Image 1 (cartoon, rainbow, N blue to C red):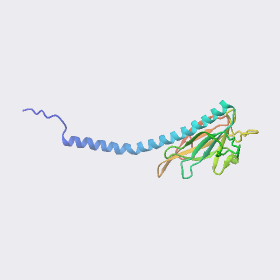
Image 2: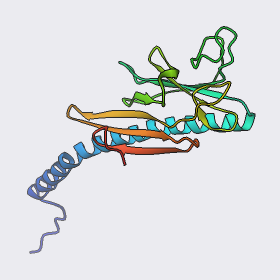
Image 3: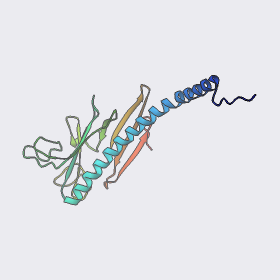
Image 4: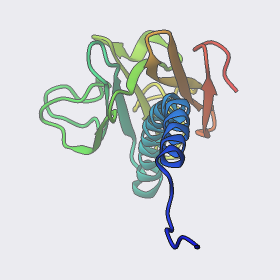
Length: 190
């Protein structure tokens, strides 16, 4: 007599569930790291696109545009693009209440804007760092007078776990070119 029972035995089902559990346990930490790394890439792309916006706006309108970075000390950090033409403190490299932001962004998620090295301490006020794209789209340290051309870096980071932090930086060349680089230790970028 032939049995018409079609299906899986309990042991076959338990083996399949065990295999799925092992695979999930193996993939889960890597998935978490991948998600955080993608958040950092998103943060770096946000800074990059904000700098491109500022450069393009300066070229298109033939006006100097300032980008102010406020690194995240206990917060994620912000980046604001504006024309530094306020009536109270014009050309002070700092976003003032009487100036209108052209674009303002905060770092997404748990990514942090942790450092901005922009060539000189001339433009460092109260922990804020600023860069000015002149009317020709070149990065300078001042809006009026003779421009001081420079290159600089803006750094973002994200902590994967208590022992692992990954970094990206946006490098600004003297000619205004922008490049994103990555690092596992915050010192050696590629």
